Image 1 (tube, one colour):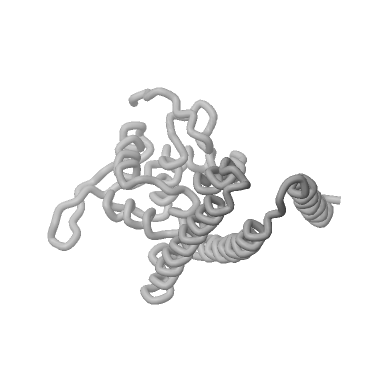
Image 2: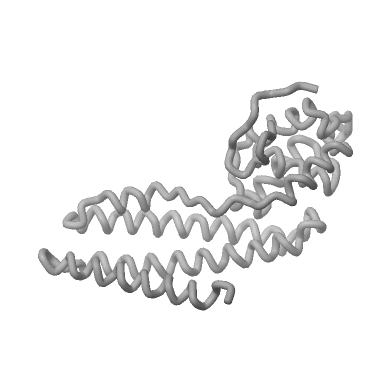
Length: 227
């Protein structure tokens, strides 16, 4: 069995040559056998794309790694009269997946480049701030439209993988809550940018907003932390 260099991708198991993408594919292979293109298409069209966005090249390369490590096997198959490779999980693959699923997951990590540019823009340049708000709104609307199209496909065409349907449906509910909160925040942000006070009042205004956020987070902590 090959021993590739250890992967330190967040979410991968300690001292494991597998990254989170490989474990995701291993988890899907535990549900059923998949062709490489079929597996990649499912990853791109399921709620997994919102939890773990990956390029198509990554989705095609990782199954080969699983085979190389003895965690999956590959067999000839047919689809539409054409030959294809079908991947199947091994007993070792099931054991490795079980070990990984028992380990704690990583916390949410946010990377939002448009918001970073909003943060770094001079607050006195109101037009530039408004441009960033508009950019973030268009991105959010595009994300909403994409999520709706994905969910509508499930509603219209039915379930592809019934074993993950309950958890996937609950994830889709989180997506709806996230977009609702994002749109509400953008509405408020647009109003605040348009009403930014001038010097020196802007300093007290900013500190007041910090206090409001601090108080709101403290209330959430008090309401949801274990007694």
